[in-house]
Amino acid sequence: MFHHLRQDINSIIERDPAARNAWEVLTCYPGLQAIVMHRWASWCWRHGLKWPGRFIAYLARIVTGIEIHPGATIGRRVFIDHGFGVVIGETAEVGDDCTIYQGVTLGGTSLHAGSKRHPTLERGVIVGAGAKVLGGFTVGEYAKVGSNAVLLKPVPAGATAVGNPAHIVRKDAAAPLGATAHLFAAYGVTPNGDDPLSKALHGLINHAVKQEEQIERILAVLKAAGLPCQGVAECDKLNSDQLNKLVE
Image (cartoon, rainbow, N blue to C red; front, top):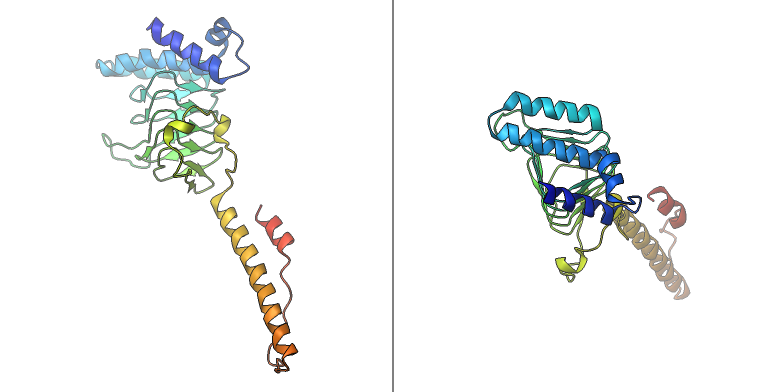
């Protein structure tokens, strides 16, 4: 148990620049305290002591503001940063080296007891503040869920999910997983991690502007050749800058 505790403390110091030393982490970090109390509650739950397990989880929620069902599976070196408002359901599975920020819900969408109702986070997943991961699917290794995303479907390994409902931003297929696994993105924020719908709209706007320019050139050539173009009605030009600002 103490070996796991040392690992947890060291992983928090590595990922949080505000953590100054082990004593501060042990006494002042509710995420670590919630994990430790969850291990007690989980031991009771797995050994048939259901009520004591639930009561320890209840006390942990009062002390830390983090609610973890004793039936949930939490791996090693999991870091719940800030933590207030985090809810982890009964059948949720959180892999090693995952990072979860405040306000995250790993919730279930089924009312059938005994079924896999809650998500599985594989190794190294980062879930940003306020994100809701709802359902019995899997978020792949080293994937990221952006802050305030509402995720309702699986995420491939190494990809990022953003938006409401969340859309998948796939990583570069040429980059192996190991090449990016060591990079830590706080709150699930990554470079060039814009909403994919916004990117698509920007692309459509720019494409429409280019088509408009091509049509103008064609009409100019026709007029220069003396061909009548009276039947072509003029229309307002696209203001690409204004449209791009609307979808930023």
